Length: 462
Image (cartoon, rainbow, N blue to C red):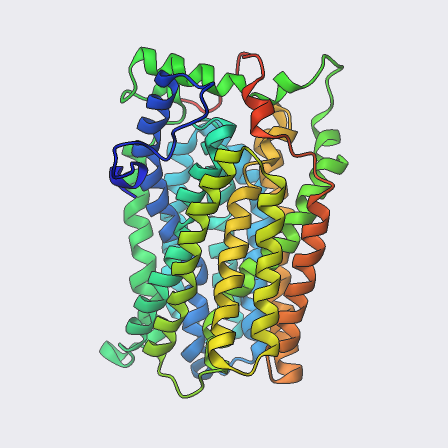
């Protein structure tokens, strides 16, 4: 995620845009992408690693602490319940104090909480520690999604989201390989392998949180790495797709009324259906792969678990570029969701290990690709005033799927002694979510680009 990642070999940018965009706007978007995306990518890598490393820790932690599948799933469920409860307050705080101060503080706090998980001694202590991680990490993803709307116009955001969100499959792949190796430290200095996992993967977030204070700017107007003309060009591009520009003059709508509108509820339901599969991948992939490769070592499981993530990174980048180029969102969201559903069916009902692994690859690439497209759309259906809380609300309600999935799948695994029923549950939700997408008020980027500019209010304190 360096400068080269935003530029093609020929020297052109992935952020090259339709002819209606000026060269000056293209140049400033390229500059913003080079400055921000690699850094936010790295922050998200650390965030996601501290969220999913419990999946690998579970390979040995469950035995060491005497946890059942239901208890292990409950630890993740409690994490997400805390995550959901704190997401909206955290985004309100970000909008008031600014991204630099708030994101830096969050990273330090969750890094310390994640590291402290090495002190878990039974189910109850694990529950408490995962709740602390959930509370402290809650604001990062919805906060950055909001933050990106301050810097990237809608027509560029599928690629921006994809370049940021590939941190999730990258972390799942890279983290799988590294976590498998760290578990090999079992017994070193009297610590279990899973304790080393939380220690070595938690402290980097603390260090990165300190760096955030000196690197991020709350808004373009405060960025000393942009000159005055670049700031004006970026402001014009952002103002052109302000949600208010696409709405006729009407009486102001109350904030709570907008958040409880059918639009927000529909977005939340679609994300709920999608997030169930994201949680399945994040928490259960190592154990799913272990279920059809019982003789494999932890290192082998880690390497196999990285294969779906490599496929996911490629899929996210290519599909995001295609969505922006065609300026279409709806089908670019539906098709990867159905592709992921087909993948879970392959994993659940095939007895051939290669087909099952292929199914995991399909589920991972489809669901993460759908997520990057999904987050290009909600801000265009919300007023600017409701955007901060609206994005957090959709993320929070959707993440009920993250809270529910580990508990349901853990219970079904204990009941049936296999993952087949749990995979069928995730498949059904993906199909339902894909059907609900057709009810969403998703504007095309072409319509957005043709809007007349309006003045965009600013958020974040200097």
